[in-house]
Image (tube, rainbow, N blue to C red; front, side, top):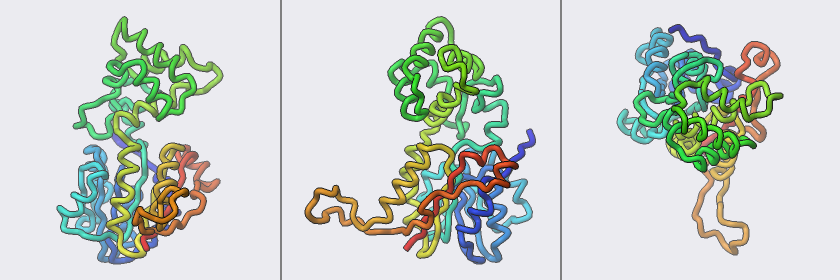
Length: 306
């Protein structure tokens, strides 16, 4: 299958990354390599460590970046393992990193992965195809209470209880195997005025399957700790839950003290490690919005190691 991909907030990200010609950079979410390619165009003797947990993405990116052989190290792994990845490569510090969070366009477009409610596919949604937990498992084995919590927490779905109840009632008769089966169940009990009432639930299941939010929150500080002074971390998020995590983590890392406000003296021994370069997130220009529908919800936040 041929994948088409337009990198989101490309120029803005490259500008904020402040690339050094001989620097070492980290692309935590390689995808098809759009951001990495632009970074490579700005390097002389530099290097990119390109990470993706999706083997298909690695293979496609290798083809797209073949002219830069020798300047890219491809790693098929989850970016949460960044410390081990860098240690295994003998790299202590990096000069910058980019994280383009969430599901990529080629995963959505690939009709065999079950990410999209626009195509009738098996319920899968795994970014890492070697992982054991699938969307099928979540939908068919989680309790009503667990489903309700996921839909509410990860999808911010107001009808989470009703939808969870409907799913359990349906699966008592037969397994829910495909995206369209799940979509139709959700539509049955959702607001008919919504264009895609299933969107929030699909998002919630995908986040649960890939543990996306916990991985994001736990990895930001790991990357900051490996940045050289002046090195920058650029994070692109696509929904409010992700953006809130990035915003809050950046805020925490930019403070010298994170003790509760009612503490008379500091006991946390926390030291500021970054300065935030984006008081408000950077969003897509009007020109990009016209060209790339997936840029509409994108937000870029940037921090610099001090």
